[in-house]
Every structure is written in structure tokens, then in C-alpha cells.
Image (cartoon, rainbow, N blue to C red):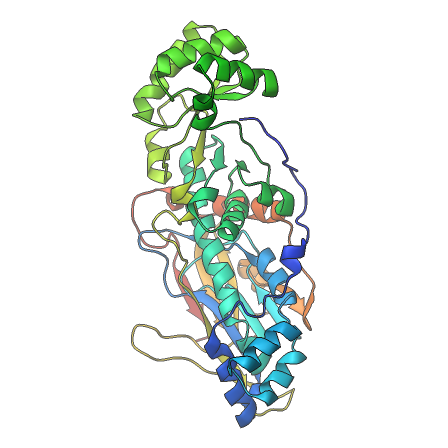
Length: 452
């Protein structure tokens, strides 16, 4: 496909939309809890909230942390403006004292967690937010919204790129999801190994390379398929990708090579038996002298369909619906739980662990550290989680997983999308080879607690 607008290697940058207030991207009960906590005095207790997933989606072997960069921007933009405060006042969501507190709100705490692109497992302490109860509890809905969505898409994308075994994958799901979810999905897919996207906003905001040529409508609006091909080649050059399944595929391939010559960039197949059709088209292209013309396949692909095409002469895959809906797992099922709080309202009050004990939904109290145990061959053998301060010899035990991302509400570490993409590649490479198998199974390495 013709690449246009991509800024390979570019860093993410802020846009007016990204800088808009995120304060109302939350649930009503976050504010009612705040109001009650202000009344009791508990609002000012130092607290630690933690994001984790009790389990991976059924059959998945690992998860992928994604959305952290977007989330850090969203936390910085979590401020209540006059119009939002007027709405809360008019609708009676909270009382005047709470409105006055919200008017001066900004997050002034600390955020630590797994780096974006890292793999994770059940109970992994993916993100920890420390501050007063009031300032940290308000972020719950926003944090879970971003991390649950982006991590689900990244996990699906990672499975797809693994199944593709080096053949490029193109994200093409914009028309199958909410317009902003489409941008986030393209970013998450690129992080997890996709080569490009059709979404221009993802290219503009995040530097994801963009691609695109034409749809069936372009062929149909012309009087003949030949005329459509001639126009596209004249406009975009011989390296373009021609869509050849509007009418008769064999005839379209013949005309495509006749129009563009043997230097035609690629043909795209979007329907039918893709395995059989790819073999047939490859044979025809070779017979016509277009031996370097590539074959792109699309049409509701998921990781299983991609794996099934491994024996086909396919050069790249365009993936839409299944990617942006998480390929059967549309959420990462992460939760945000209070795991420690101070015994008093004093800023330096000692933290004590707290935990939930309800059936089937327990949590482990205490601020966590985490590292990944690696064997002599460089292969991960366990996800190790401990309570309290990390041991002095942690570096000798394994690879530390927790990074400090914000201090006093200020950003101190924000990886670029390219860095997150590279981390994901390395993190996946250190997992046991069975991590990339599509057969159903448990987490590829166990989660082990120490000091508990």
C-alpha cells in the first residue's frame, strides 16, 4: 500500500484535543465518595491505589501494558473548569464545599508502574497511584478506561503480529469502532508490532505510519475497472496497491499488470477463500512477469485466520474489526483497588495494608514491588511480587518491572511510542516460546508472591 503521512520514529505530541480537560471522564460515584470523605476527614489520608488484573482473558498466555503515555497526559489534564463545575452544581452531583475543593484540584501525587509495552500477568501491579485518598480516588475511572481498552487492543495485536511471523500487519479498524477509540487502537496496535495504520489522526498525534490507496467504490465510480486502475496508477504511481476483487479476480490481475507493468507494487484481496485465492494470484502474477508484486489480504482477519494463511504466498495483512474489538477480549479486566492507607491524616502517617476479601474478588494489601525472574538462557520463569520496599539485591534476583512515572504530579518518565514498541519486542522475546502459541492455556509463567 502507498505510505502517506507516516512519521516513522516521531515522538507523540500534544494536540488541542489531548489538552482538553479530562475531569468529567469519570463516574458519578467518584465524586460522591469524595464528598463523603471530605466530611469524614478520610479524604486527606495518604493512600495507595493499585491497578492489576486478577486473571488474563480466557485462554490468553500474557497481557500487554498499553495506554500509559495517553494516561499520563490525561492525568495532567484532569482539571475542573468553570463550565464543568457549573454543571456539577446545577445537577446537584456534589455540595458547595466539594465544588470549592474541585475548583483547585490537580493531581499532586506519585505514579509508578510497569513501562508501556511490558508484558504482564495475573496480579501484576501494573500501576500504583499514591496521594491523598481524595486526589487518587478521582482518577479511578479514567485510569481503568484507558488501560483496559488500550491493553486489550495491544494484547490482540501482539497475538496477530506473532501469528504473522514477520509479515507486516496493517491496522484498518477505524470504521468499526468509536472515532476516538479508533485512534487509541491504532496507537496500541503499533506499539504491539503493527507496521502501519489507515487512521490519519493516529499518524498526526502519535507518528504512526499511515497507508491507504482505494476501496471498491473507487472502481465502481469509473466506467471500467481498467479506467479505475489507470487513474490510480497515474495518480499514485506504479508502486500502488490495486484492489482486484471487485469483479473477476483473474481478469483484474491481468488488467492490473497490463496497466502498471511488472513493477506494480501490490494487489489486494478482500473476499473469498483467501488461502486458495492467494496461491492462484501469486501463480498468475509470476506468469505475467510481476514476480515482485506483493499480495495484501484483508477481510475480517484475526490471529487464527492469519496463522492459517502462514502457508499462503501473502506479503501483508490488513486487520480491522477483530483488532479494534480485542479479538474476543474487548477489555483487559483490570481493577483499581486501595491497597494501603495512612492510619491518620498526617502527611507522613505510616501506611498500613488494606485489602478486599469478598468471594472470588480478593485483593492483596500493601504497596508492591515486582520483578521478573530470568534463567541462565535469558528466558522468564516467574513474575515475582513482594510487599513493601524492594530488597537491596533485587537486581540480582531478576529484572525490575516498576518505574517511577510521576512525582508530585509532575511527569518524570514518559517513554516515546517507539521506545514502548521496542520494549514490547524485547519483553515478548524473553517469554517462553509457548507464549506465542494460539492454543488455549494458562499464563505462560506463574505469578509468585514473596514476603507475604
